[in-house]
Length: 160
Image (cartoon, rainbow, N blue to C red; front, side, top):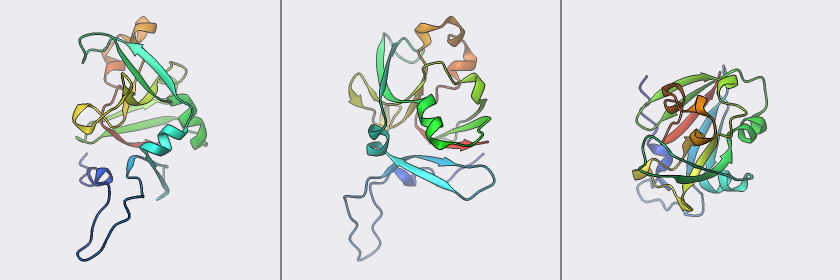
């Protein structure tokens, strides 16, 4: 699947020739789409920070030691979207795509991490959004099926 427009939401604003853009408009970092609809909702970092936050301290296959990730609990985030969501399609900026049943990711303590060790996650280091699981808390999560669902540079969630 090729999604050619995914890099655009990360520009802080787009200037048209001769126009001035309002710097006060936060850039969206995550877009959510509903099935069979053109409806979408875009979330900036500030929007994500307005949700209740949670932290995970865990080892990952991509880091040398224990890292602390914080952000929106995935369960809470999905709850606010409402509807009868059965599956998710998670899409990263590099067009990496994984689909998963909600039942396989809910109630596990996953977070939509926007901070690593207290610092906002930059685009150049797996940010600005990284779906993270508490791998150390449950041996079931220490498996490729969950590592593949830990999507960094997550930019789009399609509700299926």
